[in-house]
Image 1 (cartoon, rainbow, N blue to C red):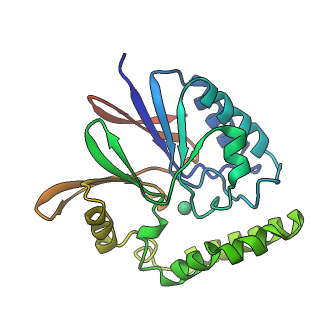
Image 2 (cartoon, protein in one colour):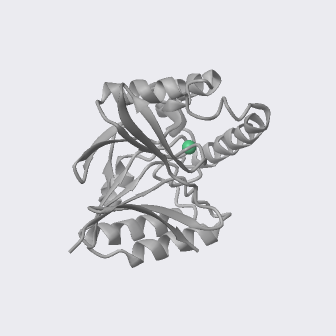
Image 3 (cartoon, rainbow, N blue to C red):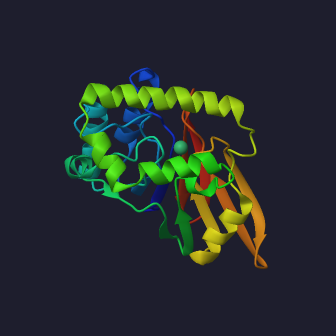
Length: 241
Ligand SMILES: [Mn+2]
């Protein structure tokens, strides 16, 4: 039996887009044990303000993830910039694995670095400063101590700011910085990197210290879904209508 490993990211699940949630739930239901692993590389949710938030579609997604894990499929998650507040309760409830911001896997013999991708966008200094602040224990403890309604309001504020920033910042600033890509790959001694975040799906081939290197950027889910489907023979990108 050929084993498959799947990679997805940037679904941005939210009650405002029930179509994407339905597609994701159908995708999970369709999986059988031909798929050994599903790696979710961040921004599964458009916003996550704490494990106590049961706003739709959070509970339905959690229960679908739990069902997937109970089929014997390993599901792993790297936090995105929208859902980094997903906490221990979520992982305990679903049985999915919480990975560090950078994670190496052996992908059919090729060491492969997995990331969400925001850490690669180092030209966006303002964002990196914001990221550093919001990843401190002090900021997170303070945020999570607020009432749920207040957290949801704060998240809405950040979303509005993010839309404004995207309109103001140049496209280049919000893409990855190639030097940062190279230094991360050198640090982990890999020639293959898979990430999401930028919503610029592509396969980039380049030279890394004289060796051919590949960076695969996953697509966001919008009017269709996208799964990077890898097996022994290679990979394909499956679109889910
Ligand atoms: Mn992101």
